[in-house]
Image 1 (spheres, rainbow, N blue to C red):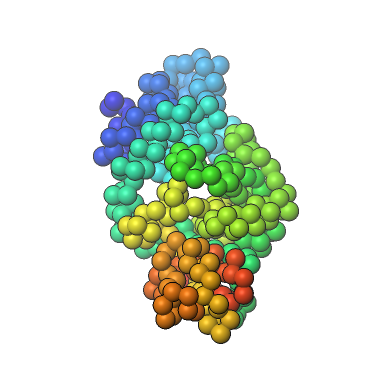
Image 2: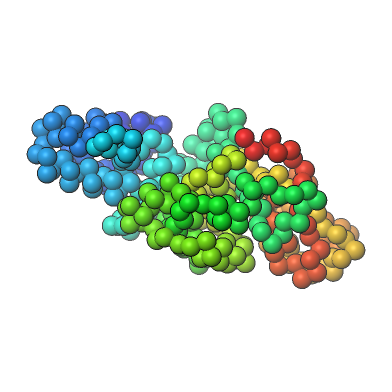
Length: 328
């Protein structure tokens, strides 16, 4: 297992007892040696590994389809590099089209046994989480204009290329019946998914429909924590997602809130309680006992806006509480 332990170390998980086993299911010893010898071209693999050119091409292509290598087309022929971190390893390999159930189950074992501690260590090291929430479309009635990088509809409208893939978290956890094909890939990430055959190309209209359906199902929009969205828009559930359960139950801040907070207009609220069921973060309570007007706990609200999607009285709006510089 020494080769596979070294591969795990390359992505910062050398102490894991499960990640080496995942690598072993993806790569035989020759493939593992190829991964450790990268970056390089197919010709480099051919000469350095003593393989025929045909075998080198076949192996590199197989590693690409499994999500273990990424090509850079800045060189001709392309230079391949090994998957660089846990996020890439998770998202790319789980979408491997020929992944057996045993592989997906082993991923879920990692998420349940090792991921929380690893996520906690990472969250303590990084100045900000890697991802952030985006407020849902229907609830954004902010007192200031919402910015393009905070609007999922604007993100997809301005994208050069869009694709949709299956949610890697729901593929492995299988804890709910929410929409599986719900991760929208943007631009370069879309091109990558299409080249591997792990996603299908979609139009702006299809993307907007996926977002609308996701909001109705109570899925939370999540993307990279920066102004430019050039990778993905995930639609996350509170049960299967790699980040939501440890945020909700363990308080591990692996995803930033949006710049907004829900505000309930008590004069409009009828106390139906619908918003209580929609809030996964326990941020909504009663003003004066059950059945009275609802109120928002400012410290717990993540600004996703799901509470407002199904409010029959439209008594909930999102108000801006953090500066634009909150998003790096």
